[in-house]
Structure formats: structure tokens, C-alpha cells
Image 1 (cartoon, rainbow, N blue to C red):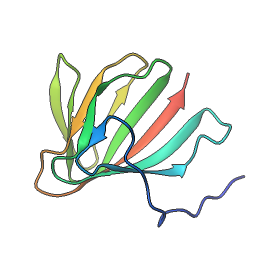
Image 2: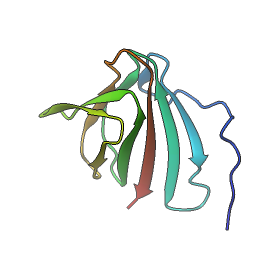
Image 3: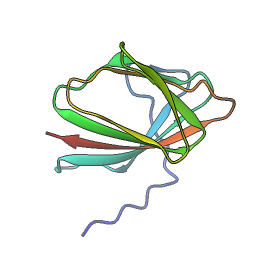
Image 4: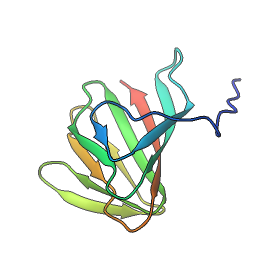
Amino acid sequence: MNIWKNGNATGVTPPNHFGGLNVLDIVPFAGSNFCVQVSKAPVGGGGELHHHDDWSQVFYVLEGQMTFDTGKERFTLTKGESVLFEPGDPHYTINEGKDQSMCMVITVKQ
């Protein structure tokens, strides 16, 4: 069993993300094949179009809304909704709402 008590820690803005988006590792990879993060995006914050070769990611909206663009489809999720991106799936994110967005992001390495 592992317990992490870093909920008040300061996160980081990952490369290729913008507008003040901040990601905090709640459960870091640390030798496992998954991690759990909280991603907070002020209005206008997000991530450039990218994909992961060997990671699946679930985004679960905790607060506000987040717009996703895959290059073929654009959609907005709100509190309580989620999306799964499989390895190779392109995704762009941006908070086009009126308030901060907060998402739980679960990443699993394939």
C-alpha cells in the first residue's frame, strides 16, 4: 500500500501546454504503469495537439468544462463527463468556459 498526501503541492505546466494549465501528480508513475493527476486550466489554458505512443489517458471533468479536439472531432465535456484516448489518438485541449476547469487525468502505460 502507498499513501500520497501531496494534494496541496504545486504542480507544473508540462511542455506544449499553455495559458497557465497546471498539472499535479496525485499518484506518480514512480515505478508503476499508471499515474493519476489533477489538471487545472484557467480560461484559455490547455494543451497543444499531441498524442502518446504508449499511454492511454482518461480525462474526467471534476469542475467547469474542457473542450477537446482530435483533428477530426471537437467536443466539450462538463462536470461528471469523461473521455478515453488510446495510444496514438491525437488530442488538443482548451478551457473555453467561463471558469477554471479541473480534470482528473488517469494515464496507463501500455
